[in-house]
Image (cartoon, rainbow, N blue to C red; front, side, top):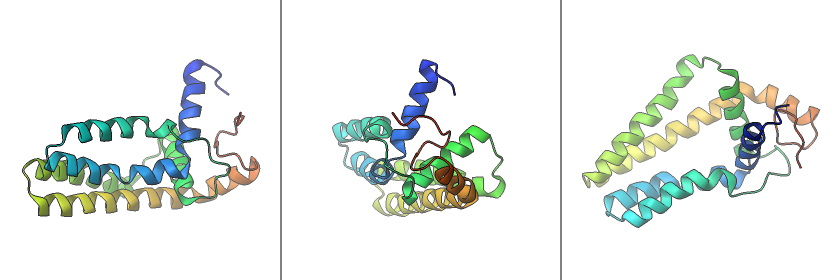
Amino acid sequence: MDESIRGRAERTFWERHANPWSGWSRTLTLPALLYAVYHRRWRLLAATVAFTLFNPVLFPKPDDADAWMTKVVLAERRWRASGDDLGALQLLNVGNGVATLYAVYAAYRRDVGGATVAGALAMTLKLAFVDALVRRYEGELDGLTAEHGDSADPEGGDRD
């Protein structure tokens, strides 16, 4: 186990981000961002960006890894650590990025229809992507959960 400061910080980040409250509360950030841009509420925009940056460490480590959103974060961590080529699955993630950029552009232009449709598409693609990640790594995640008890740390590190 990497006991460097960076390694501990990274482990703490992922452990806390695995709290379902972290993931589900982040689903509100795109609508908040689009609302802030559309209405030119720059303080709300700054608060939304700050929340997005600090969200992964705002919540405590989850007690277990049973929640779907916890599995989403663990699967994302597994994917990033493995460097797996996701092939066609990656198109969902790319589509999410493109739709998000267009939604922000449409909100800036005050095109409520474009911002709404692109924002909904972005969120749908993101949820489809993370659901596919969970399904891809589900057996591995289930094995890690069973092997390490209630630990939400896929590397099996200490929870304290």
